[in-house]
Length: 101
Image 1 (cartoon, rainbow, N blue to C red):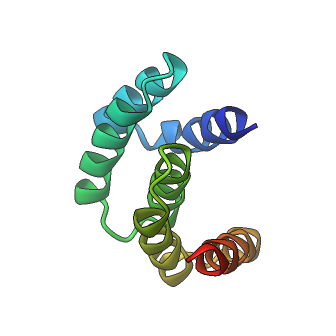
Image 2 (image 1 turned 180 degrees about the vertical axis):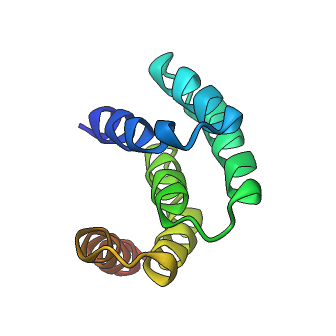
């Protein structure tokens, strides 16, 4: 399920035409989560207030069992997103990750 969610998120980011996002998408499709994370981190530097990038980065950290890093990314996603659904998703993940600590 996480792989599907990650692929879906990458497909939403792809219209941004970022080379880093394209590379992250290719790495993700190949199942290379760590490589996808490296590329999405580059995309984050290119667009540091893009909530969708933080969302994708958070999901990648969760897939790699890195809850603290995921939590920080969800918090940034919540800060920068104006989309109600994404904000709600971030809140759910933040609550879940906080409960695990």
